Length: 338
Image 1: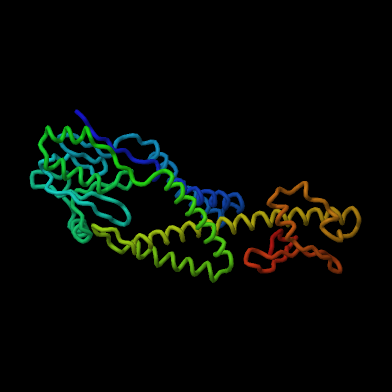
Image 2 (image 1 turned 120 degrees about the vertical axis):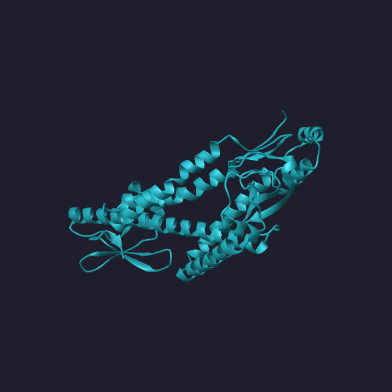
């Protein structure tokens, strides 16, 4: 029997892994930088354990090669619905629907189709509110045009068995977009994220403005119910929310990275200054006097050049302007910038 098998794409799995890895990395960093029992140490383990679960989930999505939807001359079956195959004679009509950015094909079935489980009243109420049915085919993980599949279902449901066989044999999957467009969109998103991060680092006011905008957008994306037509308001709100979320992760990662590198540089300069004093009974007159370049990597060398070294009556002082252009002074005893 000729069948059309529609498989999940790897995009969702990659997206899940991409979203979880930054949190896992930050969690590992918190674990390695703090002592056991501290809040940061505990939160680090929580982040690694919680967000780390996304990695096996994403890998499963990537390597799961089972077909999600199978179409043949008898009917259509979707593995994600947990229902039996619905026969073409049992389909009254099908129509496309958008629910929170996810594409569905809603199927109106006649009374001969028996659902495995009775739908809860609250679920039926929500379905009615958003224009969905009890049987909805989720296309969020399948690279196929929702209208193409919807037209195919309606055409097959109104055809005789012999005609269905010919339709299925001649059907070609009309995928959404192209790899080139996807690559261009990815580049645009990356550049936009970098630009947004640079804007955020201009000050706390910019950071909180972006966070508030993300929160408002997330509420709109979450509570603005979909319909059988795409909602530009909700689509834009969802995009803004995702950008804000990614920006928050990048912002925290950048701050943590900056603190780690500058503290490492400060410790190395302080150590060399103390070693210089032990040898010559005085502190060096400048950083050029102590050659620490061999102990620094490229990033550390960059930040070392930003540090201002000066002598006081009895000691030395290290100054650095941080990412927010705020002056910080290194404390050799605490081995941190304050």
